Image 1 (tube, helix red, strand yellow):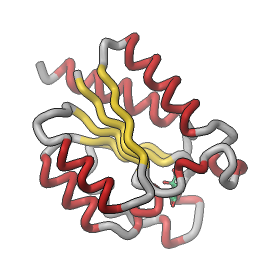
Image 2 (cartoon, rainbow, N blue to C red):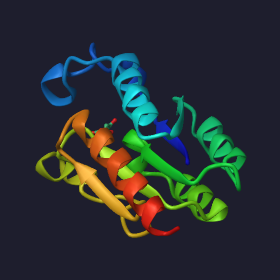
Image 3 (tube, rainbow, N blue to C red):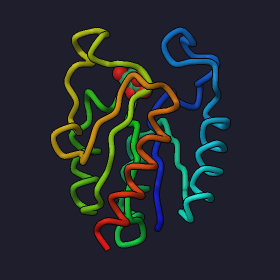
Image 4 (cartoon, rainbow, N blue to C red):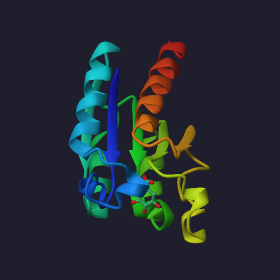
Amino acid sequence: FKLLVINGPNLNMLGKREPEKYGLHTLGEIVSELTTAAEGLNVQLSHFQSNSEQALIERIHDAWQAVDYIIINPAAFTHTSVALRDALLSVDIPFFEVHLSNVHAREAFRHHSYFSDVAQGVICGLGAMGYHAALNAAVSRLQNSN
Ligand code: DQA
């Protein structure tokens, strides 16, 4: 299976950025652990992070018919981006939405997501473990659909 992990704006700052909310792990560490876990599951994992909405949209378009499942943390675009939501719908690839922090325990403007109603599942508040839960769930979904 081919899985694409997408991380949105400011997640390149993980480890330095508000560690009490997002933890001390860098994005590099999270992705390298996730890649190791994916190899054990016979999954080809690609990762893309960008601070640019345009670049994220174009990466999703490139995934059309090339990726089986997407795991996305849209970061702040979660709460703002109809365009990123539409990009995911346009390629018709099932996806899980992941957030490191529990967005529902935070400011009201983080309670709404443009992704949750079209995601196959939503994980928040588990920190980096959320990406691993999403990886395992995606593989099990893909295996059961074959
Ligand atoms: C986040 C939560 C968002 O509200 C925030 O803008 C982020 C990170 C998370 O992973 O907890 O940048 O998506």
